[in-house]
Length: 257
Image (cartoon, rainbow, N blue to C red):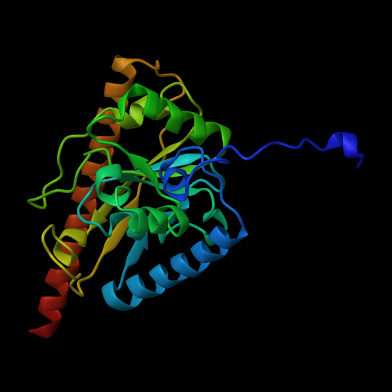
């Protein structure tokens, strides 16, 4: 290869302070961050297996390569870790959980951890606007990213799943990026809002077949359709998962008697 074949580009996040870089959609990672994520996600997998007896269902529905988006119900602060633990470690530098900016990116130390260990990207719930969503959409497609997104916009306070907001549609409508529905069961019982430490309860994770929204228009009608389709898919996964869990519990009780 000749030197002429190489293309040198200045890092997009050059000139930013550390805190600005951690909060930016333009930040770039390196070997240190990649090694940290390998250690982090390996530890998360081990912890969930030992403490929550996590079970994964439907892993065959996950695309082999990014970009793609996983959308899930939002039960607790464990959710991004639960979903991320199901994904191959080789994707750790492409994996970007979308996290509430006002919770995870206001305090510099927490922002540094969220950016470096999780590779999380901030969503500013009060003032994200279409420009922020446009930047997320651009990064998803151009950098072959893998997003974890919770379309309810906030954690449930009752254990019930809330209506989905159209933000996911703004990121994927009219693109070939697959969207994988995912149902989390047990995280609310493990770590409900207000709890200081997680409880050692069982967690199940179920993936459904991916959607292709490339034919939907990148405007409000398309966004709303995507929100409705993904919400209904996750509700179907919920019915199936909860029904199976109830059946297993009933069978276990019968065996004991």
